[in-house]
View (cartoon, rainbow, N blue to C red):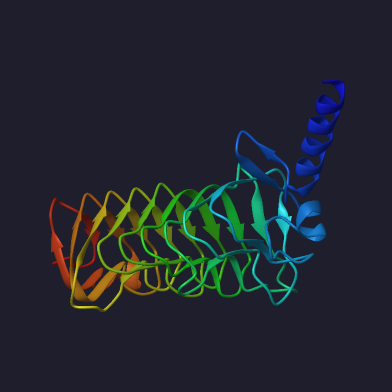
Length: 254
């Protein structure tokens, strides 16, 4: 009996050593040191990007400072949830890394990102080609663009500000709600596909250099938004957009 117990303990120890990264209550924890070491999931080489190749929940336990010419986190699987846990993914102006979090075309669907800041990236803060993604409670500031996300996605309760390009670009059948979107090129831009629709509700879309809301293909309903000071005070919205409730506009809204 004693031999069996000792064998079981030894086996448990070996299995623990084989775990890619420390996990607490099913969450894999990520910090700068673990990214530097690699091995967070299979296929994750030392250094950036941190590769997430398994579905599941991941949580930051430190800020991540990303090197030049790469992404901060590469997601390569469906159904990944990333909780930034109040921390920041950043890169400096001198390094100009690509995107904070990237889910490439064909890599998966159902990415969820929440509760943190992404700043300083030359391409996008969040580049998520997959469908049914959720971005919420984020602060995305001073990036090349804010959020690119696919069909059936939601962006909510976030600040997207001071980008060189769009604040949010979304595929079809998206919900954009309760965000502050300011100081970008176009505030909210929808995929030009003629199929599908979308909703834009309860946002403050202000002081963007181009229009606050634009859709050239799908019909978009929008209501209870503030659209103020976009497009140098000219037309605030453009394309196939239909007001569902009153909007506060400075400049012209249909």
